[in-house]
Image (cartoon, rainbow, N blue to C red):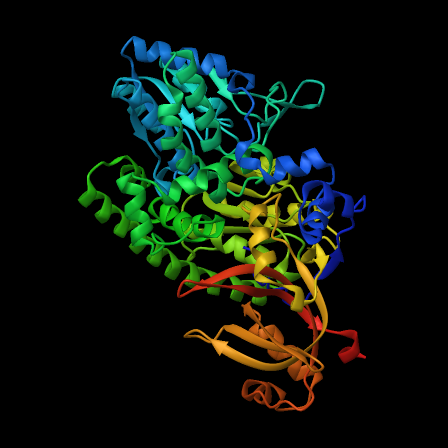
Length: 606
């Protein structure tokens, strides 16, 4: 989280956050370090009560689940189906959010005496969400109630089909509500005609927080169902919380307010979990002995969970989190880790094809990069789109495969709502859905060139919008980057969307030595001095090529080699943006300076 960003040819923009008030009073009132007070103030928490609430997020009470529109209907329909012995099928999705939603609902209904089943569509054969064939199959198997989680909000025709078969549908979703043009030419939200539709993005929903992922919605539904049936919610609450935490981090929803409270309260329960499936995955992923944070969830556990749905069946991951058998859990966890390794290989192959096509076709000049390559594995299109977005700092649409309808995934940048953009191209698409920053679609091959043209013609992003941007919380000389401060900063975690890493900056640092680390030598340990002061060491992930190009273009030949040997007579002078971590090695804690970006200082560049 907060690592080095590859800007390509574009220099990142650095701006210093400005506090609307002086932070000195806040430091005194809360008895905290002045640096901590400034960071709170520049992030909008300059009032003592708001700052205190942020710092103690794990104790924040959540709003009542009954405030969600249709929550009462969802609960009564489900409770009635259980009481009448009707067959209930949980219809999930194949990503981490959909898998965790399925697990939460299955555990909830089972704990209340129900006997639910679950169904997750196969990614490449069925695609995303409710579909007619699956609904017919479930009907033939005797399902009376479908609970769609992490999907369903756009399934207008599919829900109507289920209704026609005499089935009921409850939707627990968090995606954007589809817009339909009415007779007056206005775009209006249109909901499926389900028995209940719980989605905080409904215009008529009075719930005060709109950024839950689907598993968060399911977690609150479980609470509401328990309360309706007068069951002991506390007994199940802490068992379900880890699954809501995993989904909240992996689905990259806003880590603020109620999401932040859930994650802050739930992360310790992940480390202490007694569930054999979760324990087995922690062991197989090699993080069982770590103090888990958002990085471990988002970049270690999450990819393993997602890999099952990408390459095989997401049922594998659901079964892992439902099993009580230790041996089965071990086997399933190891299978997920193996699938994730396979996914990495497919991603690297697909990314190489994508970046080659971008170079050959000149797509990097487009405001919205839209590419189609039949040899890219459809299941990793979203990951590749994310890489393209990070490299070129602009929206990316990656289409893959060789089917009649080509499926793809989109990743966007702040300020460009990719879901709205796709809605403007709805006549060219077979299906689409998603969020402002991530979406999926299917399209006929012959419509892809027109889709590319229209997305770019309608795009209003400026050059500044398509530029990496570091918002610096405080100028902090690296000599002040202490272990004590690093420990205090942990209270700001978890970092993620809406709560980015804390960025510091320093200037006029003499780079006196470079040490390359790792098998592929892509990690750098940089040694700095300031005149006679120092040395200080910093770590940098992924910035080797940029630094090499920078030094070769501005310094005498051979400077790179001399810096590797620590014998450069005229060291380059750099300004840096960095984050401050606590590094633990051999049970010893040290402050770690992790460089996120760098540039030649004006002293060097003149």
